[in-house]
Length: 287
Image (cartoon, rainbow, N blue to C red; front, top):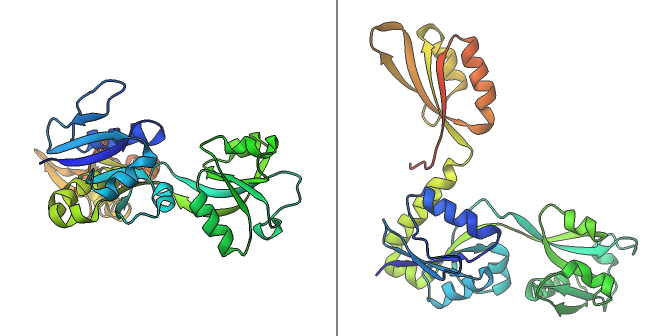
């Protein structure tokens, strides 16, 4: 029986999740624009396309073995699932925001009895209780930013990424309840029964994440400069050094470099007389 993996069916998490699976070598068959289910051509894996907010419940019940969703949704659900890894994308935060000009700068300034509009009622209620605030939670399914201006709520608890939407709607952020990003979660019973296979899938995904921000650098370097090159290009376990046929004064080096260090590294290599410098993207890094 194949492992069942749930992936968000749309939105910011969907495209990146599919991209990562493809980079991990798992080629997902195209099931059309409204696909609900797809198989993987070269792996013992079935992919289910579900609403991000439903994935935690499906994983918890064991309808699917694993899922990719937002950590905010895991926290809001309160369900007991196993978090295998943070995935490094879909970063945002669940924040408290108030209309500008209301004289509210901190949570303690919020009057008791204030109305809070949010799609995260459990997290919001728990947070305000921890702050000793008695508030009224109004559950909405979206567009929280407009509710204070419509008189539906006094303030909101909503996801914030850049903060531009808040500014557009003349709202200001006064507190952060939780940080969130995409996570890979698993059913705890499935981990007991099929832990090895599920860890292998998680490892394949992790290898893609580890390769993010890395590049593979190759260059021909004068032997006389090799010690200096080793000093600023340590790579994972030092650069790989190979002899060139017919040359005793030059060697070839291969090394993994942080993407942010490529510009300076190439310039230093050129000053040391390196030639044939080649930068290659990395799909996966398997330890």
